[in-house]
Length: 473
Image 1 (cartoon, rainbow, N blue to C red):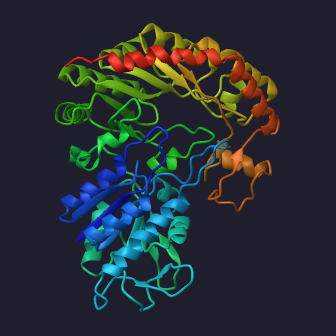
Image 2: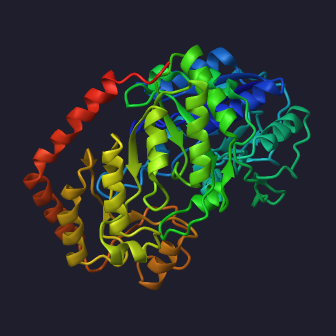
Image 3: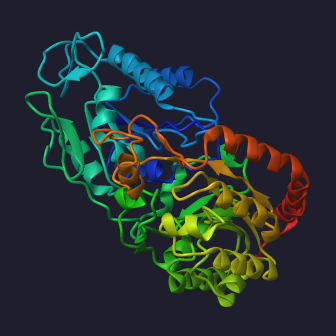
């Protein structure tokens, strides 16, 4: 089966590498299919590129990985879905045109004005559309409707994708596939329970589909998953929904083998360790770092750091393994707000870990958010007053929180009358404390940035270290 697999993210913020999409595409290829992986990151004209590749490849199935519903930014909101829908429609049009009109197909095009699909209306055959990705797992029904898709698969498990595609190729779609989202005989969207298996057993050849040159505009040019899942219950976070409430750990030696391959075979010199806080659980993080050092797999390391589970040994190992920087998870610098957000840390923990990180010869960034639940003008001033003393190489204050489905923040927003009980959070709503109006926050943040413009100079020594430091061979 010819499968066109499209990585749809074109938003360059932090340039996240398409690890999940590449894994799914490689799993399909290992199952015997011919796969063309189309990465739209960096493409000047994604629609034209999608049209050209579709015409050349003539797919039997088109898969689309959708990473984000939106960019979750109140100040610079961006909704990528209209652009992605244009790509989907372009692929659909070109692929369908390439079909022999006498050929059979699992689904048929309808004649409705909204150009969606109905599995029981016999019109011209078409190439089926299959959706997946983190955003699809969060909003499966909405995504199916928005894109007029035939099928989708939620969750992070790879085997169900290959299982369903095999059944599709055989002309008998397996509607019992875990995570499958489809239309029943009455046109209703049915979503099967999905699986969250993590990435403890993966083959590293998925990197074949990742063009590292597209992503070398940031500090790292590769990415590796070390574990998935998170047992915390932070007010704003929906990681539990898309990756589970328990840690699923990868074997340290398997992580190291992947790093060695990237370093020696692909020339990578820096890597982002993908998880919701690399230093948790602490014993696993240390085992990973020890394996990297023991095997000579050192590269420049970047990762998220949670300031409530660390020690001097971990920081020393991180530096020896090539570590340069952390993105510290410090959503506020005020204890009342941290408590309301259900964070385990308090400002004392953040302050202590900031000193320890600097003492270990490492750097860190901060990205707190103002206007959180429990925020007042006094707590805003407290965070702004404390930030410079932490000596982060960069501190980027945001405003508000994008409300996510099934989170404590959504329940709070309903209680406080910000959204209705029926709101599924498909359309972006941002939580902002009633005590800190948006106009006041904007003005206060502008004054802070003007009076602390010199803090941007802290980034220069780090950039020099990133350019010149070479981890051990």
